[in-house]
Image 1 (cartoon, one colour):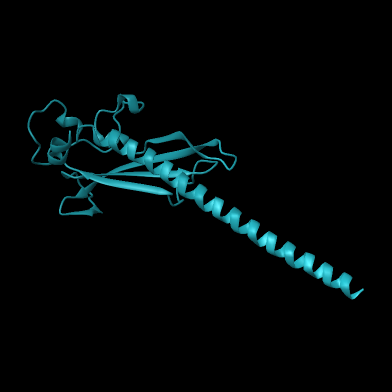
Image 2 (cartoon, one colour; image 1 turned 90 degrees about the horizontal axis):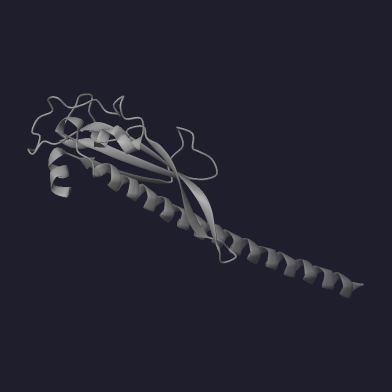
Length: 179
């Protein structure tokens, strides 16, 4: 009888140890998955940022050979009425409010890959040139492009913190140098 109880106790202890090991492995796999998804989302955010910042600083500057030196005549942030989607966008601020869903792949536990959606959201705003962390209530010679990336099974609510976020402040001079 005593040996039977000891045997049962040993089986329970070994089972608890095995369960703990399995939970550690599962936790490690989840951490690897999260890191891979964050890397894939960051790649997509960077790609979209490069696309946005490759456009002219402002609609009013398209075709102008000179660098703008004042804020007079700058356009309002956002796409114009004749720009229904991103294929028509012709300057940086047209992307304000733009959203896009892209698919990324990451490793599966069986050695294959699994495809997941990444939701991208863009915001563009005028910022103070002397303090680009501060939004400006008036048009300035500095615009901040903020791109947020979210991964998950459904589109994020507006108040959800992004999984990945990149920001770039562009100016007419910055644009002239980098494009």
